[in-house]
Length: 96
Image 1 (tube, rainbow, N blue to C red):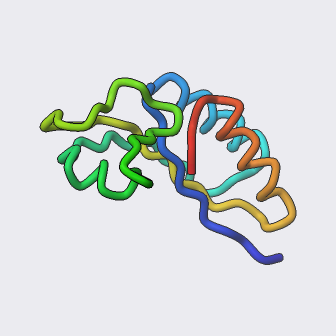
Image 2 (image 1 turned 135 degrees about the horizontal axis):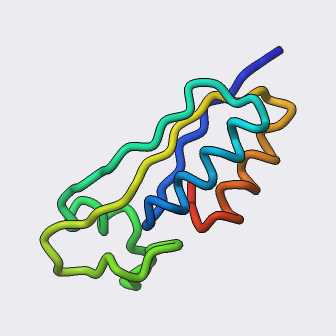
């Protein structure tokens, strides 16, 4: 069976952990949650469209701030449950 890698961002560690637990219940493999601290300038450049600020799922990362923090969840899921895995991410406050 084909597998797919899933990488998602969360503003809150508890949300990322809850999603990880649910993915493990679906028999996802290599489920990891890690902290990511990075320059918000690099972060905002990928999320700005038409001059408007967009940060899905995160209101605490603002343009002009020097650091942004989020949590990355990664997992390998079977292709036939990939849509369920995406739903779990969204239901727990994450974004792809």
